[in-house]
Amino acid sequence: MGGYNVAVVGATGMVGRTMVQVLQERNFPVKGWKLLASARSANQKMEIGGETFTLEEARPEAFEGIDFAFFSAGGGVSKEVAPEAVKRGAIVVDNSSAFRMDPEVPLVVPEVNPGAASDHKGLIANPNCSTIQMVVALHPLQQSAGLKRVVAATYQSVSGAGKEAVDELRAQSEAVLRGQEFSREVIPFKGAPKHHQIAFNMVPHIDVFEEDDYTKEEMKMVKETRKIMGLPELPLTVTTVRVPVFNGHSEALNVELNAELSPAEAREQLASMPGIVVVDQPAEMLYPMPVHTEGRDEVFIGRIRRDRSVPHGLNLWVVADNIRKGAATNSIQIAELLV
Image (cartoon, rainbow, N blue to C red; front, side, top):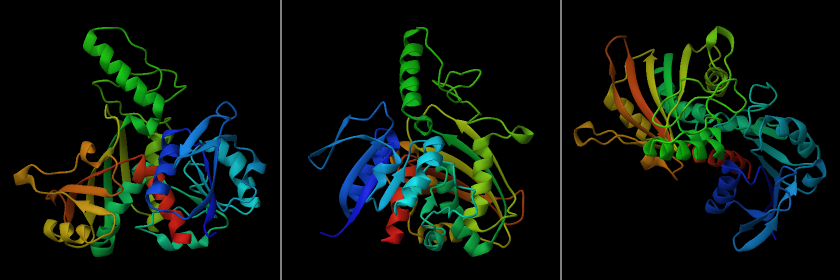
């Protein structure tokens, strides 16, 4: 029987469950499944294709005989267990930030730098969800006219902060509408010294603050984009914002190019690329929105227009399902490059 033995680490989480779903949808050649999670989730049951599986704890010995291991259980688990999986012969695709900037680990978005995947030493990193959709949009523009400078603002859904954030948005929204008190425990991040309301609000703070008052999320996007695109000196600045949307990240990109590229030429170039859907008919009020991208694997781009404040400037609006293309689907696509 052909195929591969596949392990999903963090199988009970939003991304882990979606990884299992996407593997099935895309007919990845799975010969055998192993579903792994934390000790507290071990012995839970999950069903795949009518077959019931018992979750196991993600211990090093659990990776014996595994060909591909998809990790989505946080950086701590990845740092501890992913190298053990590699030692046992598995190819690891890791969705945490643990290895992304390691020069020995490829950081891959298949539409942008597929060749990097073949340089792996058993471990490949999946980029940040917001980085993925941004580089998919920027890559065709870089190929056509060269990137001179990029300014990005993100509007990121609560699913990017996990199921607890989704539950908190729902509970807070219901409480606000009923005039009731509510708790604040997840936004901007678990364990923060102070938490904010997310219902009917926006919070310009994702992850911890670092140097020059940029957040870790903002600097992830800067550093990862430069690595993926092979542009280590690309001038790029980012502001990341959490918004009261359940699923789907949106980004406003202001791009300054090295050469002239009209909005019409940009639309044509973007539409010709795999993994991109251009939705850009202002007269018909058609443009990408999170409610239309949920459950989809493509990156949706619209509001493509000239920025007349600089030479060769363009504005774009970029939307994608952050759980699928921003995490699970991109991970599976990376594995598909290798099989």
